[in-house]
Length: 374
Image (cartoon, rainbow, N blue to C red):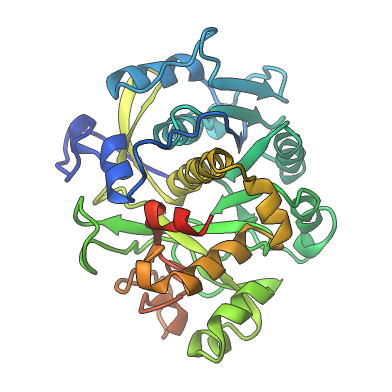
């Protein structure tokens, strides 16, 4: 996550300080106005942070004319596994929490958002919070806007096994904000049971051409160090060069979303002030909001997203199949330009191009078209 001052920049949005507004984002990604996430539950997992989260959310909501969350409309709930422990100035997740909660609400304003605050930012405590979030009744999606360097034990029951243990829940994670230097992929985005969200830069509010959105130079991606490429990627990639360049390892990310603080940030209200914020950590909670819209759409049609996810061996398998089947109707807008190369050498996986790539995955969502598959 990156933060900038509102006072010294001019961007393309209609929101606070010309940042992107909720209306800009919903229009850009073709989110049907009739879908609000009503009746759906999503969760955000973070480490402890300071500030008045509920109050800041309502300030954000009032500014953008979104529903306020209160006792009459309990659309925001907090579960604090830290039991109110004092927050260290050097490890204060206040801005991340505000970003996650406010922008999940922006995408799915009628959904119930649970903020699950871990006891600390240690991986053990963060995964305890993930389990708590995933076990919430009716939860459709769990967003994780955080990550750590990959490690050999990530494929074990203590980590990948946690995600596999909740087959009806959609897990989403930020792919990282440090580009790709060949060995800086992060977990849990690397897990094949998680939908990894990469980063883009919005150049035009209307998503109409290849110049409307490009890969963000700092977006995470690349071949996993420890995870084997899952079947849904092998089946989608076929005999393509991307398949061989990943050398049998899980390709990251799966999807992409706006993340560029320099070009297309979003406004966040935190601790009494507005800031311009971006990063792939902005994309993960907004994708969770999109999952809530999908769940609402299916519920209106007498179906269950959770049941569909279980029956199709996971959400990732569903979206890769949607991309194949809906190629003519563009369920995902293909991001075909830009790079996230951080190293000095040649990096064939660091360049966005037609079809899947390890920079922007399947592309960015055309939500209205994706719903045709669900």
